[in-house]
View 1 (cartoon, rainbow, N blue to C red):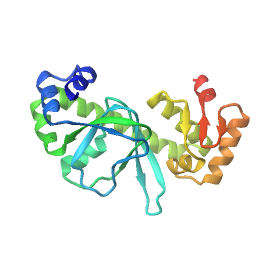
View 2: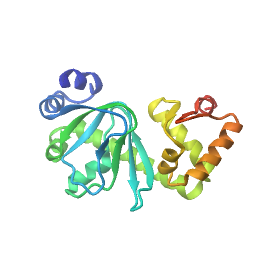
View 3: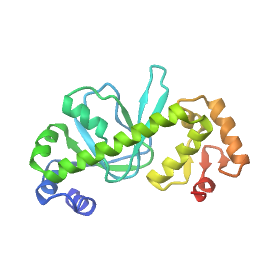
View 4: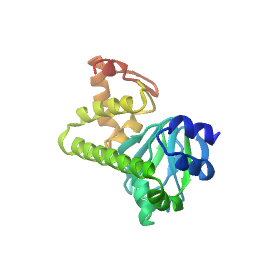
Length: 214
């Protein structure tokens, strides 16, 4: 199964790298809301996403979350790669947003692959650039955008990442992702519904009207 997946999703990898992934990688399937990486843990393997969606976030001592970015199919969490390189504890938490499949790569292969395979080095460096841009984007939204703008951006980013126009979850889940309170988010969601941007129902937010305006 790993061989077929690697050939299909990573045709740009050199043949030696594909063979190495087939030999050492482990294919796994995860249910929604499953934690893949915990903060402050040493990482033994890192996921390359095959299908689904993974959110990467930071949490504080009270359990409040700050969404940093999403991982889509074909992508890897470069923050976790940096921790692997330095042999330090994870600085982020990664959870599945929906049913997700991934290939897990042992961390001890990271350094050797960087020198052995040019396409792996290019893949990692390109991923780091993407993640850096997204972290700057997240910082800009916190520093310069109002909460209603951040809320719209939250749904738009999710649509761009996964193509989904439905959020299955509570207002509290959205508040956690934006490091806000449920009361504030509920009020803003109601305003968005009144403006025809979303549709609200129990445990479900339909933001397709917002996406249609893009």
